Length: 302
Image (cartoon, rainbow, N blue to C red; front, side, top):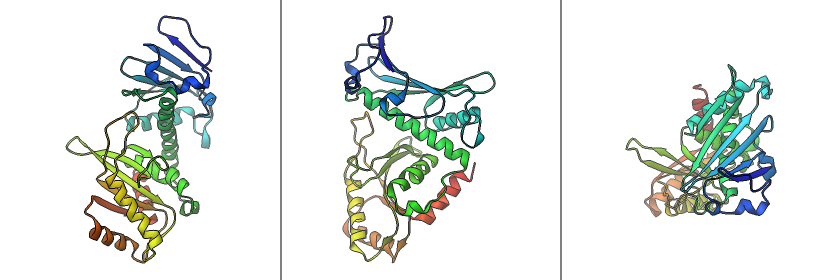
């Protein structure tokens, strides 16, 4: 159920029609609050156990989203209490700079997460909800991985690129401390399956791109090497944008990550081709062995 009200007045809608979700937030009346009782109404179920609610507030210059989950007494996977699970969620939120809080006497009974979107000129209610759910889904996934000791490698990753990206690369990049980790495949990626950033010692952001491949890449096979070279060139040349931002971002470092091995001098062949054709930023190559070592490094330290 979804309701809307203007501060100090009675609710205007008991339930939104679907088309209202595609209305730009700035078209809403000033100081408006929208209450979403369940995300399942939008096809966006997040935590299947317990109850949840979302409040979206429209202010003159920004929109804020508050997600609250109630799980007191809920039994979670592997017999963990809600208190243990909630603490893992709060820890992951803190690592992303997401404001969060909890309630409960002794044991945590509910958790609340706050999001603020400063630039809403081209943002619809559906888009803002989508961005929030994407981040919350990552928080949930990473909390569960932290409790289980990290991703467990499956042979399927060497055949299924989508699974490799979502279950291995995405949580790994976030665990390594990168900011704004986005899986962009299929959305004007321009050679970049992932974009992410890190803060330098100068207080500025350095931007990265990553191209993922399932299986092996063989040297001497033009059908495997040439597409990677084209993606590298395009990734450095074409900018990307963060949700809600208008300023373009350009990468200075690119990673080719595969779930198999670089065979028959494939890595050396790609490097030599790049040296002869262009002068571009740094390019690194991750194979299965390298990725497994990173998983052991970043989850084994907990």
